[in-house]
Image (cartoon, rainbow, N blue to C red; front, side, top):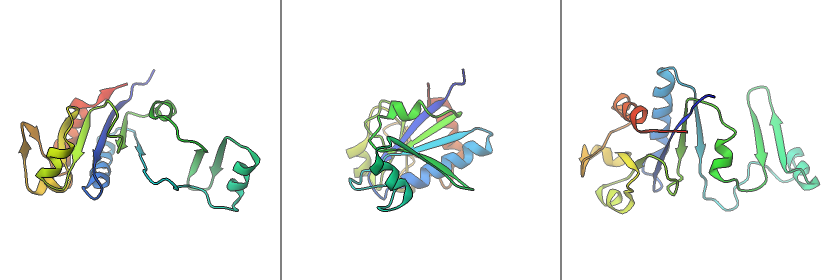
Length: 166
């Protein structure tokens, strides 16, 4: 059975989470790994579908899962919120990088705007700090602060060592 390694990148809005995830993914791919991501969205009325479209009509008819296949991408949509473990069970890759999921019991990279944000958001599961604050700090209470845009290799070295093997 193929083993997968996972981390989460968490923090408040506009702290550099997506940039950090993108840089980690790019570096992992350069290193030859297969990579998947899952983003946690906190918008109550968020929907992939549009009212009146064919897939929306499939939902209205009662389908529990709707698939969409196009020439350049495909998607499976489940019309309910799914627990993280269930989503993970459908993924096979070397690394899974989560954006958000601050409550997950996983190794994490904290992204913050400033030192106050680090103080407010830091969890015991954080092995590294990144994001906007990395322009101001290099270490915080023994935890490395790494700028993903400037030092992604160093960050991914940590990800390789600290990620959780599932």
